[in-house]
Structures are given as C-alpha cells and as structure tokens.
Length: 343
Image 1 (tube, one colour):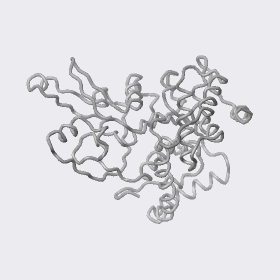
Image 2 (cartoon, helix red, strand yellow):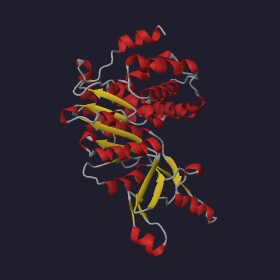
Image 3 (tube, helix red, strand yellow):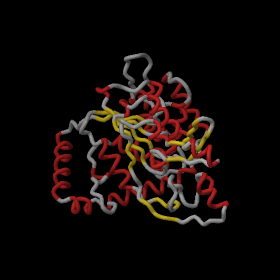
Image 4 (cartoon, helix red, strand yellow):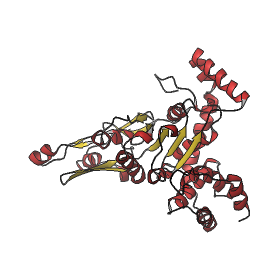
C-alpha cells in the first residue's frame, strides 16, 4: 500500500479474471493499446484500476519535469529535458508512485492536450506550453470512466496519443510535442450508449464484466469488503505476500518481453484466425500477436504457444466481431479454441 492511501488490494478482488488479466497485460506491454471494460455498475471496474496502480512499484523520473520523463531513458526525453542536457545541466532522479490520472467527462480539448501561448511565442520567440491531462498521464494509468459519453474527437485524441506515445499540439503554425506513454483504461456501461465501431476497434483489448452469479463467490465478495471496511490496515497487511508475488511476476514479465520474438508459426496463426473470423483491417492480427507475447511473458515462457494465442484471442477479438449496425459482437471461444488446436 502506498503511503497515505487506503486502496483495496488487487489480489483480493474476487472473480473478474478476464478484466484483471487484460489490465495486467497492458501494464506489461502498453503497446497493446489499452483496455475497454464494459459492464454494469458495481462490478469492481474502478476498484481494479486503482488497485492496479497501487500494485505497481514507484517510477524513477526526472525531477521537475512537467511531463514526468523516465530518468535514464534519453531517447524518449521531452524537449525541456533535452535542452537541459544540451546546456550541460545534470538531470536529477526522483522516485514517484504510479498514479491513476482520471479524465473528467467535462474536459475540453485544451485541458486534455494542453495549450500553447501564441502571444508569448510571437513576442518572445520562445514556446510556452501549459501541460494538460496527457502530460500528467505520461508513465501512469489514464482512466476514463464512462468513456462512451466522452466526445468522439476527445476519444480519438486519447487513442492517438496512446498509440504513438507522443502528444502533438499545434496552434496557428506553432507546434509542441511531448512524450505521453500511458496505459489507457476506459470503462463504460453499455446501457448508456456504445462507442462507434471505429473507436471500439482502436482499443487493444475489451472485456465485458457482469455481477458474480456463483453463490459462494458473491458471499466471498461481501465478506472481503466488510473485512476491508472494518479494518483496512489488517486486511491490506494480510494481502501483502500475494501482492508482492504478483508485482514481481509483472516486473519479471516486463524484463522477459523484449526477448520473446513471435515466430512464423505464431504470425501465421494470428493471420489465419483473423481471416477465419472475417475481421476487417490488420489491427486485430497485430493486437492478437502483441497480447499473446505478453501472455507468454506473464507465464514466464520463452516463446508463444497456442495456449497463449487462445487466451489473447478472448481479449483482443470479441469487440472486433461486430459486422452490422445493432449487431452484437460474439465470439464462440470453444469453436475457435478447437479450430486453433487443430491448426
């Protein structure tokens, strides 16, 4: 537990295994492109997002940098940090906790992307940039609750930044960019409206969550929540070992990830699956491969196997199955799993 916070432990969340796995895989490999969690209220969506950040270790960043640049990663420093280095200044390392940066529904484009002071640029000949939400999100988790109620152009802006890892702002010919690498998590209740298919497809993974239907599981949810509310310090202390194990597993997976190179068989299976399902475009194939690699890393494996592709398919493909307006996406995983095993 991070100092000053009382957050329900990630490993104590009962059920919702697909949601938890999708969140973990995005933390291991942010290039997957974020996760969209769809479901009714009271299904631990917000709890899981905040618990995930609390689970992760502190980050080493450049002291005083408004964009939270990772210390020691000179290839991905912002313009301001690069200018400091050119002047011969020494960057100072500081440790900061992983944060959940929330985007309010009332946010404007300027508040999200940041603003350029054109008058200052013209009169002084120097750019002045006021950072926005995407600056604070760099290196953290960007959480958008009720993302389906956000203006489409803002969702586009978030998805562009998540895909490129850079936020680019231009006003009247004056431009500024800064690193914006974050884990994007959107949550929504489908009863309040859906995302356009074009936006839905751009989320790397999607998970549908419902209230637990198993009697024992529902009782366990109540028991744990009451215990947490009664004495959070004791409840959190009891979860420390499991939390530490999961944290270490995530960190080991991050280290292993770059060494897992998908072979021709893996690429062929991903393409065959996409063609078999009639998925449009190539984003499904690419996301399926990235996710399968992250699953293999999380399992501590050196290469991708069929079991990793099957688990990745459950998260990367269902929301891309929509073919016509008002038609719900559906993926028969039993049929697909049998088909993959026979490949």
